[in-house]
Image (cartoon, rainbow over all chains, first blue to last red; front, side, top):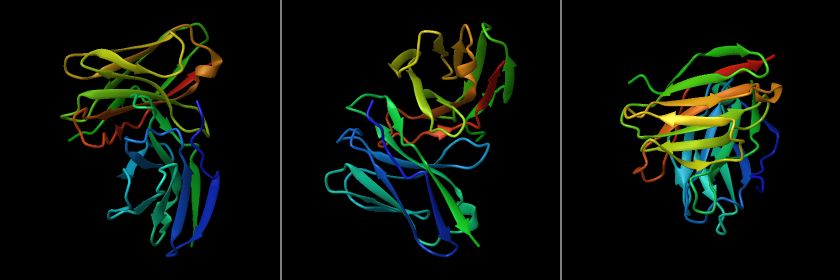
Amino acid sequence: DAKTTQPNSMESNEEEPVHLPCNHSTISGTDYIHWYRQLPSQGPEYVIHGLTSNVNNRMASLAIAEDRKSSTLILHRATLRDAAVYYCGGTTSGTYKYIFGTGTRLKVLA
Amino acid sequence: DAGVTQSPTHLIKTRGQQVTLRCSPKSGHDTVSWYQQALGQGPQFIFQYYEEEERQRGNFPDRFSGHQFPNYSSELNVNALLLGDSALYLCASSITSGAYNEQFFGPGTRLTVL
């Protein structure tokens, strides 16, 4: 399986915006792109999802490239509670097989 | 709503033994997926159950098997345990008819194989 890739780690200052990228060329063109985050000793938690156009919710925004081979999760004002590992993910080639990205560990500096 | 629950939280086994992990999905959810997460890695898809059948399988050997019951709860069985099976095992539930199939995850079962 081709990998869905993300930077290993990123840092942000508190109250600053954060852009977390993901390359996901293997996620099916008709299936949603999801983002989850995982705190230590917990299961992943849903953040946001999108299909083709940019999306906003109370937690974050999601910008999806026109060719759908990449997307960017945007946290508008990072807080200390946003420190977590962020995963992009989706199903592949119209199957039910779910692929998570390699994950980005976000560190937020006070 | 209790959300997704998993049991046990921790488990220690020795090589060659067999283990059964259990999952209760979120109320109203009919689909259960299992993932293996090694330390420092992202979750890897093991399989998905829907209508008491394995609907999709990831790249895992036949030593990994599962079951879904009429109440939608599920079990993951692993036979002939190897040291490399040590990981956090996550269960996720979702609604098959949902528009975007958001998954809700349990806290996981930490399996250590000695």
